[in-house]
Length: 166
Ligand code: PNS
Image (cartoon, rainbow, N blue to C red; front, top):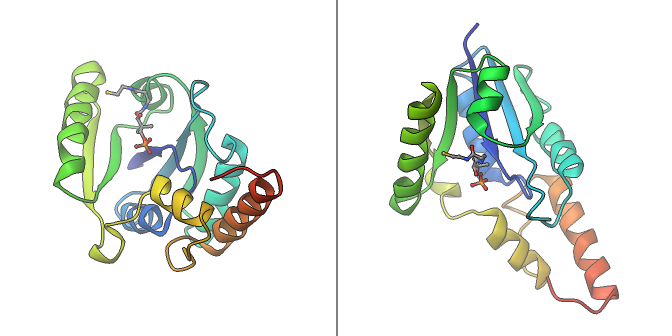
């Protein structure tokens, strides 16, 4: 079975992630979307909520599974018999760091990395920009799955009620 993992923070999943996941899913028998559990970084959404939103976003892709991991990605790959990491590349600015990580992951465990160039229509999306725009009341309805939009609006209402910024 050809298996790959698409790792990330996914706080929250955007249409850019969905583009990369959809295209990667067409290349492998099973694609695991793995959310990083990072105790040092709280994020807007908890890991369980990010996973729930991801599951909703990929519901029509039967060979995609959502999981979480902590620690080194290569340890997850080894433990779950996953030989390939899939990463989306939006721009040249992504490439430098991604190349370094890809080379390091291959050095550490012989895990290969496949880069998928994002579709130009979603190349400008990032979770952090989307959180910032939504937090200040901007329209991100075309940039994220519907369920994510609803959660972003709810988070904005909560922080507005608490008198906080995004
Ligand atoms: O969505 P992100 O935040 O850009 O994802 C980054 C991620 C989770 C893919 C990366 O930080 C990662 O692989 N973290 C796990 C820790 C690890 O393996 N570090 C060594 C990388 S060479």
